[in-house]
Every structure is written in structure tokens, then in C-alpha cells.
Length: 463
Image (cartoon, rainbow, N blue to C red):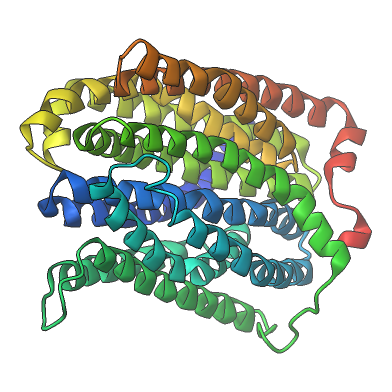
């Protein structure tokens, strides 16, 4: 019994050691948008709303590209679990090739989206700066995708601290760039919200270059220089990567698309309603980054155990990650309930925003635990190679249920932005319940049906 307890404690310690840097990295990633919002805050609610809309329109296609790369979590982690380091390197190469294919279509979609704010009914005072912000931000798409690909590789092989270091440097660069470019410091012209976007582009170039450098250093240390034996494109491996990544991209499209639709719907109300929504959304997204990081750690830990042929360890890793993620979100909900007004005041003391924001933040507290459950379950299932069920759960939870309810409450019953957020809460309850049940079923099957684990591992031909 003592040996078993020690083993579990060791696995929990390893999970936490992996999760903490990944969580910090997710927070650093989220901080870029928060820094942009805070730094333009002095320009007023219109500027805050423009950044909100620009980011909403940008991240729907960009995160779909990220989603296609999420298959690397499964494939590299399982390869690393069976100590096949050359396969890890080959999967990184295929990820880079996929980025090269994705970049141009995603940039074209984003460029088209920048022309859609005014026709979509957004107030001209917000639509024009939002379009300029989005067009400038679009130039960071390629480095963002390269960063995402290299990050998935480094996380899956356990090199997570360098990702955190990179995000800290990128945020410092972004903050300094915002200060210079938004307000015209050090002899530069004052670019307003476009300056915030340009600073973000520079920080993403830094992120991609830094992580590629860290990956090269890692490969050189183990005697396999990154560019000396770079793998050629493989249609078989690219197909396997897309097979896993396409449902993950669909899941992100369903989830992020729903939240961004709510942001656009808030833009049909008033600039104050949109600014309030964006501030509360930033807090909800900030707390979400912690279970998202734990989710990535769960995908890696479960994938390592599955690749090593240890189903009991895979099951424990998933349940321990769920405990960590839901525990944090419970604490976040308590903070939202106890201090809503001071949290809103960190962004702005505009009296109209302060009249609505604290109540909306208290509503956000209601779905924190459900958001944590669905996020960590998605990562644990991805470690087993299951990416289809999270996509379907998000499709059903948001689009036929949560969004119609939210839009109806907002525009038919005139509940405003509160109605939109009630719809989001319902969606998260449905998605979390569905994915928790699926994880429980799959965790039992890998332990009780030996053939099930063999079926979910990639074939030898695609390794």
C-alpha cells in the first residue's frame, strides 16, 4: 500500500511539474490580449471594443490552424512514451509542413473578415479601428503557427520551461511595443489600436524564433541536430496528423466561434455593453488558461503512458489532472463572487461599465467549474487519440442549445449581455457533462480491454 501511495504521489508530482510551466505559458499567451486591452483602455470604450472585435475575428481562423496542430500532442507524446525519439523529430517536421500549407488560406480568411464589421451591423466608430487592428494583426499569422507547432513538440518531449521563458519575454516586448506604438513614444507616430496589433506581431516573431532555437538546442544535445536530418514531407504522416487535428480544429471552431459570435452580438448593443463584455470575457479567458494548461499536461501525460503501454497510469494521469483543473476553477469562482467590482476597476472606472460589469462577472463565476471540467477532459481524451467526441460535444452544446438561448434572451426578452452569458453557461454545462462521461468510459476501457489501447495507438506504418 505504501509503495502504491508513493507511486501515485510521484505521478502527481510529475504531472504538476509538467503542468505548472504549461499553465504559465497559457497565461502568458492570454496576457498578450489583456495587455493590448489594458494599454488601449485610456483611449476609451470604443478602443476597447475595437480590440475585442479584432481579436474575435482573428482567433476564429487562427485557432482552427492551431487545432490542426493539436494532433502533435498525441503523436509526439505517444512516440516519446515508447522512447522513439526519431519519430518525435519526424512529427515536428510534418507539423512545420502543415503550417506552410495553412498560412496563406488563414491569412486570406482574416483579410476578408477585416472587411465585414460594418456590413455586419457594427457601429462605424468601432468597425473602422477594429478593421485596422485586424489587418495589422494578420501579419503575425505565420510566426504564430510556427510557435504553436514548435511548442507542441517541446511540451510533448517534456521541455516546457523554455516555453514559459519565451512567453515572459514576448509579453515584455509586447508591453513595451504597445507603449511606444499606441501613444507615439520615442519619436514614433501614435498608431492607436493599430500600434497594439503591430506590437503583438513583433512579439510573435520573437516567440517563433525563440522556440525554434530551443528545439534546435534540444536536438543538438541528444546528438540529432534539428536541420541536419530534417525529415521530408510524408503524405501518410500528414494524413494521420490531419486525421487527429481536424476534429480538434472543429472543436475549437465550435467553441471559439460561439464565444466570438457572442462578442459580435454584444457589438450590436452599445459600445459600453461591448466593453463590459470584453472585460469580463478577459477574466473568464484568463482563468480558463489554467485548466487549458493542465489539459495540455494531461494530453502529454496520458499520451506518454499510452505510448508506454501503461493504461493504469494513463487513467490516473487523467483523473489527477481533472482534480487539479476543477479545484483551481472553484477558487476562481470564489474570487469572482467576492471581489467583482475591484476586478472590473482594474480595466476602467467608467461609471456605465462599473454599473454592469460586477454583476456580469458574478454570472461568469457560475460556469467556472464546468469550464474546467470540459477543458481538462478534452486534453485527457486527446492523449488517447480521441478528438472527435469533444468536437461533437461543443457542436451540440453551443450551437443548437447555448447560442440560440443566449440570443433569444438578449434580443427577444431584452436581457442584454446577461442573456448572452446565460446561454454560454448552459452550453458549458452540457459540454462538461458529456466529456466527463466519455472520459470515464474510455479510462475504464483502456484498463479492462487490452485490445482497446492497441486500437487507439497509431499504426506502425505512420510512425
